[in-house]
Image (cartoon, rainbow, N blue to C red; front, top):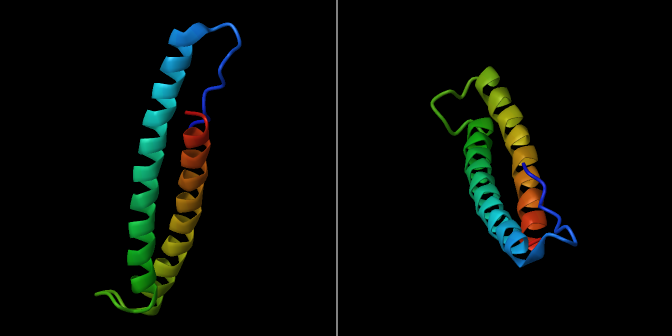
Length: 88
């Protein structure tokens, strides 16, 4: 996760364009990573429900823990993407 670039008052139009392009690229990257975390979260939720090849108790607990971790990652990437989008 990277923070958006703040436009320095004396950096000029070229620097501002560079920052905007960098923020746009970071936005796309964070959006893609967030989508990956969402997909992983959904797969782990199914595992936690016992809808996978490993439907043992430990497999279901592992799925639940994985889904919780993926949810945190998903929110982190959404927040970073939003910050970068607002800085474009």
